[in-house]
Amino acid sequence: MFTYDVIQKFNDTEIHIYKFIVANLDKIPYMTIRELSYYPICDGFPSNTVIIALSESGESKELINMISAFLQKGYYIMSVTNHSQSTLSAMSDWNISYNMKRIRANGGFNATTQVPVLFLFRG
Image 1 (tube, rainbow, N blue to C red):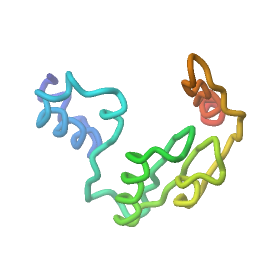
Image 2 (image 1 turned 90 degrees about the horizontal axis):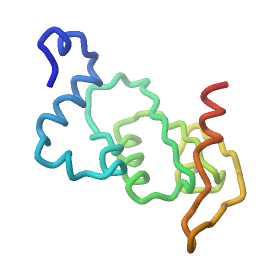
Image 3 (image 1 turned 135 degrees about the horizontal axis):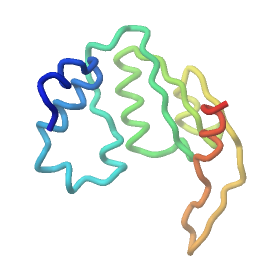
Image 4 (image 1 turned 120 degrees about the horizontal axis):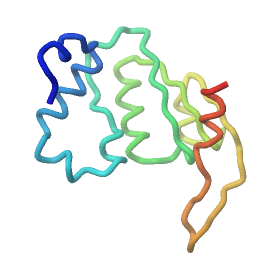
């Protein structure tokens, strides 16, 4: 996948992700973007690590479970959600809520986006 020289330049996080990919080469082609986005929980991050979680609803079961695991490790949580009263917001040390009206399209599909988040991080 990568040359030895390239791998030697990886930081700890990149090494962890690389090891996860190599250990799961047979599964990765069949995983969805959502499955791939759930980073494996690991030890070894500094005690002052801040996890940034982005979620429109703040109620995704998978994300809530992952944030619970990060909290058990003692990490700080900063979240960006559409709802200040969401489960994720309540679990977070810091929360930014953009409180946009939820838009439903095509038979109920949630069309509310994370576009406001891009403006927050870009600015």
